[in-house]
Amino acid sequence: MLLRMNIVILSGAGLSAEQGLGTFRDTDGLWTRYPLEKVATPEGFAADPALVHDFYNARRANMRAAAPGPAHEALARLSRREGVTLVTQNVDDLLERAGAARVIHMHGELSRALCHACGARWDAPDVMAPDDPCPACARSATRPDVVWFGEIPYHMEEIEAALVAADLFVSIGTSGTVYPAAGFVELARMAGADSLELNLEASGGRFDEVREGPASRIVPAWVA
Ligand code: BJW
Image 1 (tube, rainbow, N blue to C red):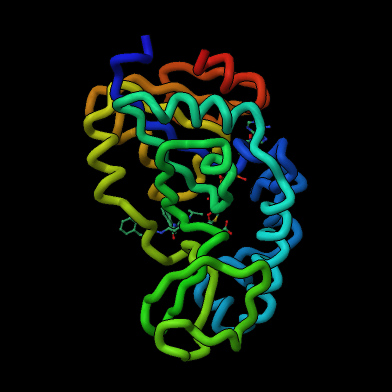
Image 2: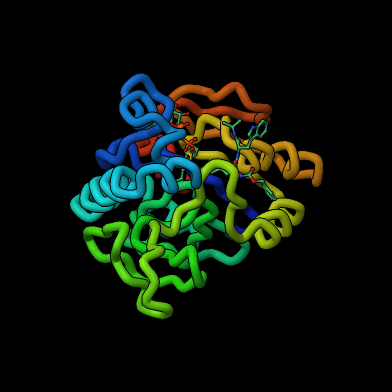
């Protein structure tokens, strides 16, 4: 049945939780150990760039040590079908390493660096530091290429176009608390799409159908 549909899939931290990459708001989530205003806002970065780089260096190391799981592999297979758009809030590269055709990273990527002076982007080394020179302009203005609170998520026009053309919107492993991603289900439904949530526990969002369980089990079962 999925064969001829336009499907938009939005994933969140729960997709990669079983690979050892932490979620944010669960009881042992990253925000319980690192205050988000210090590590995930432009103001936090301006106040203490070394702390922010340490936070992302550790997460980059964790990501590079992790391997994609069955949910990433199932989504990668599905992404090779026409009409499937994979949008992720995750900054990890596990979908790409599972072989996904294209992944839209609306909150950026841990594996990329950004110069906030000239806007250049390049592949991030394992460890970044505040005084690293930008390869394009040589200024020491490097940061992880991720989207913090108060910044505009990437690829919004493309995502909104896919949402209004969707027959089915599927949310996987996200709490639905961070906008604009939290509003995608409403946008897709208003445009006539059916909606499905796959999550360990229902987020409480407005979905036509909810399937609960770990991503490693329920995502391959849905794709099959
Ligand atoms: C499992 C599982 C398993 C566990 N299997 N499932 C008031 C109203 C509306 C908006 C605002 C407002 N005040 C401020 C705002 C804006 C703000 C916002 O939304 N704030 C809210 C907190 C209210 N948003 C922004 O600032 C955004 N920008 C913006 O709005 O710009 C304006 C604009 C938009 C569009 C066009 C033009 C202008 C930017 C938001 C950036 C978010 N950045 C972060 C950090 C990225 C870098 C990094 O990774 O460090 O993104 S914050 C963090 O939250 C990260 C995530 O992508 C994001 C979402 O988290 P996610 O993925 O949902 O994780 P959790 O932990 O919340 O949930 C995990 C889920 O997994 C749970 O449901 C579990 O059940 C499940 N799970 N194990 C399946 N094994």
